Length: 407
Image (cartoon, rainbow, N blue to C red; front, side, top):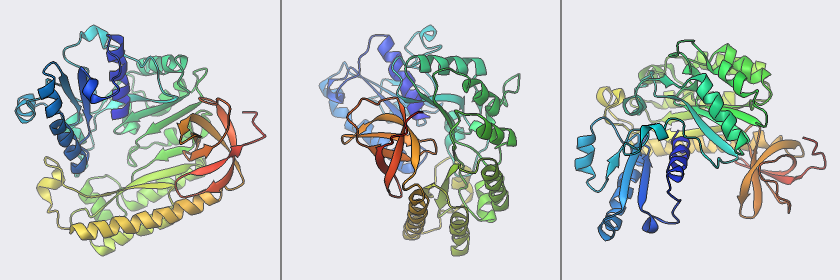
């Protein structure tokens, strides 16, 4: 979400005369786009603001703006907390000092090969550990016409892959008069000439529909990869988290997805050390990971966020050392599973969209989201090529340009 919003902000500033600065020391305007999903993320933002004090002192003309999820409705409180900040505006909004007519439909002039589009702001789920609904508000979908127009413009300007993002993309359209849904939106964007690939995230297991699964299976530009956070494998913990589904429901959903899209890559999120989590309950999460074998698992140790339901109702009673041990166990298990999954690709040829270079090698992702590196002297940026995989690891693949490149 923040990456998508930063792209739009950067484009806005360029269109009104700003140029990107090589360093903060040279900048006339510094915009901090904040994330507070975890306490550690919020701490980084606060630390960064503190580090800018000396710049502001040496250059009184410097303007500093703060946006993102750290900005809530209490601007007066924020101004007292961060007196060096000149402007505050909420996540998904545009700077208050800029003419609103300029911000109505800002689309990046120079999008990246793979670029983001926000399709829905906010969340109605109020998971007990999550601060997002309190910072980004209730769900509010953008119109389908507006999103499709933006996607078409981005493709015309050079984007080859569109990633639709939202706190819960499965809720897209439920608040619109015509009751559009994500499946319909994917169908329309899939028609755009010049677009190579289409992805979306993040999903919520209780809201993912069979219509959406059918769309993934049938639309040629929609990639075979989804992020489907499970968060825990124990029903009591899931209930305390207010996730709205059971472990059995989640397993059945994964079964349906894999039946319709057999080669799909599924990634998930896990929180360990939620208040009250016993060793047996943690083991239920581990057993679920062993059974379902995800391509990747994003792992977080629970940390209380002031203002959430969990922070009010539950004691953070799992010791830090226990949380660290559980994170290490899941990381080790996921590394082993990912290594085994990726090893099955050795010797195969995969379709890769080239997004850029890293340490002298071309890099891109397969349709299943696998990061692929290879050497080639030609300019392949933005092209879709086939790569023969010669080396695999848990987190990436390496190969050579295939002789079969008719794609």
